Amino acid sequence: MDILGYSSLDWLPSALYLLLLFFLGSRPKGKVESPAFTGLVQALILFILLIHGIELHDSVFTLEGFVFGFAQDLSLIAWVGLAFYWFQSWFLPISSLRWLVLCFALICSVLPVMFSGTLISPKAVSDPWFKGHFIVATISVGLLSLAALHAMLMSIQDRALHRQLAVTPNSRISHWLEDLPPLMAMESLLFNLLYVGVALLSLTVFSGLLFSQTLFGKPLVFDHKTIFALISWVLFSGLLIARWRVGLRGRVAVRWVLSAYTALLLAYVGSRFVLEVILQRA
Image (tube, rainbow, N blue to C red; front, side, top):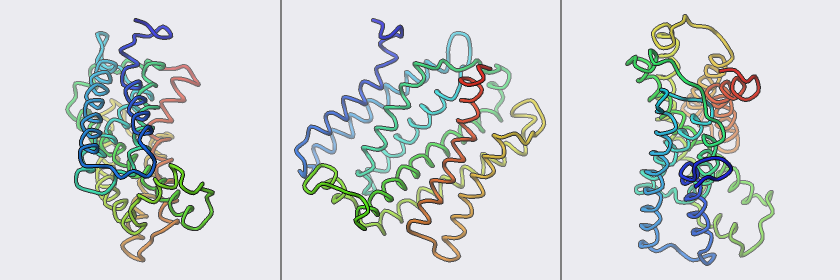
């Protein structure tokens, strides 16, 4: 069966994400989740992760070769972020992130259906340096995506606490906000994500700088992708240093995270989007 000219299987991950969001939204508002319900949701997320992963694999590793682009990149980032969420939610009180992470995964899982990407050089793909760089980069951006969503949630929570965000009493949003951990606990979780994510981002950036010839077949070029990647790394690293030296926290830290993540997306996704969609070049 085809939907809008595409195989229905291509739409399966996004359809499953949408159904799961409807299922979560159908619960009576304000009702506390039972362990059985939480376990069921975790099992459903794992099942959809497997389906999404298989479909993503098939859209990247095609009969023509290794196909990649901004859409596949975003879908993979969302998949990694959701996988990190699923794993950490067993040990940390981050169930409040679930809606944001699932919505992000829903949107990103649709993109590879609409944008097919470009064929990557088989020589580059077979290189072990490229493989290592690609894996670490994907994991780091996926983890920092989760941190950025967490920062957005903290911003919403902070604005609601200071009456800067109009929330209808006894609504789903008000109950959702009431279920969030205290801001101090949220902030601690945010920086735990950042410590690991920035360490992996450092490895990604400097492996690209040091081994550009080996990884990409050309000497280091300070193009917009490299510049935005360095800006993002400087911002994230500066945030952690400021946290360590002066105890930076609160709204300033959240804005810092979102600014650094915006630069990161411009580096790893924005450059591909401009080439593939705007300039129509591989």
